[in-house]
Amino acid sequence: MTEIKFNESSLLEKKIPTDEQPETKWGRLLLKLGMPPSLFWGGIGLLIFMSGDGAESGYLASYLVGKGQTEHNVALLFTIYGVTAAISAWLSGALSDVWGAKKVMLSGLIIWVIFQIGFLAVALPQNSFPLMILFYGIRGFGYPLFAFGFLVWVVTAVNPARLGSAVGWFWFCFATGLPTLGAVFARWMIPWIGSIYTLWAAFGLVIIGGILALKSIKEKDDTVRKPGADQHIFLTLFSSLSIAWKRPKVGIGCIVRAIDTSAEFGFLVCLPIYFTHDLHFSLNQWLLVLQALALSNVIWNLLFGILSDWLSWRGTVMVAGGIGSTITTLLLYWSPTYFGPETMWPTLVVAALYGMTLAAYAPLSALMPYLAPEDKPAAMSLLNLGAGASVWIGPAIVYLVEPYFGVLGIMITFAIIYFISAILTWFLTLDPEIQAEIDRARADKKRSQSAKIQSNPASS
Image (tube, rainbow, N blue to C red):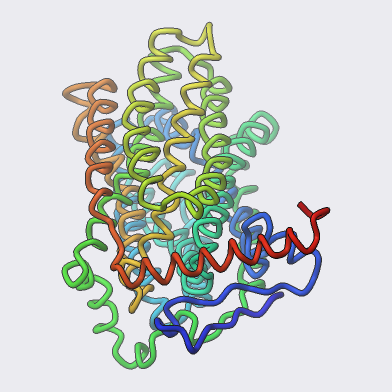
């Protein structure tokens, strides 16, 4: 695995990591594809972990309703889960300053395993809503510590000339698992072994992916941890929040990130029920719609990440993400309502378009750490706080809006907040010296690629 080195003589010492220089053909191929070789096996582990975590995403809400829980209770359960996930996502960055990203990831894996056992072995068999809240709610601390701990390691170790591509690969692996392969896994396993045993099978995927990712990370203390943070834990945690008013743009970025996937998590609460109960789609048809959305999201996470390195991190998020998602959210309601389950292809196309515009927020993960380059983990804490907050904001909007305005009101609400995110992204400009350093890194990358093509034309 390629060692990551840092440029000690840079104007922004340790703030702008140098590029990897792989020695193997495989490493050079990965780098051409936009993936730093040091991320490869960690990304595969993340993909497997999130596949196991996401197996429930397409059917757990409707399954619980079928077991006698009310839709209102299910929305509340997912909201509580989202609150714990939001806290955990914030902690993933703050604790990386203290422990390092690898220990944060290990903590997330352990929490997920212990409380999923309680959820599957105790809460579901008893159909006890209080126990579901206890075990499923605390399990919400698990995946953000694991996944976003890995993201913190990525953004502190990768040269900014490739950071858009690197975070694109991160979100590619993340979204390939949750919900894409997770939904595929559930779709194939449920008819074979049933809903509960499918969750137990997914449990095994989480363990396999978690171990693989943890074994792949070769972490240096100085890539993530802040010197002395372990001696001042509470000050470190506070600094990961105080950066929001020290660097207001980081706070704005947190809000944009919260808006990003809030609708997605809200949709997982209301749309399975709306499609299957109100529009009379079969469960298999609904899962197919979800797969179209997720597959498109996976592909465009990677493409927008790569494109944003050549175009603009901020512009990609603002135009393709904010404005694009405003439009596709409304279409995602109109298309299935108008065409119904008899004519599936328009709904599949719209779902794919929504997945594409949602992916355009991926470059925000590259932009955020350079809004506060002197303390990247703290900036990532706020980014991850926004990501975690979206897990409960989405279900909370469903919980508050659905009783009064129905699914149409929910979709209009999400469209409005997506448009607000586009306006907020306009203000996420980098400090001039940071932008100049990143532009210099990008120029060096382009010159290097041009020199390689000229020296070996056949390789192009």
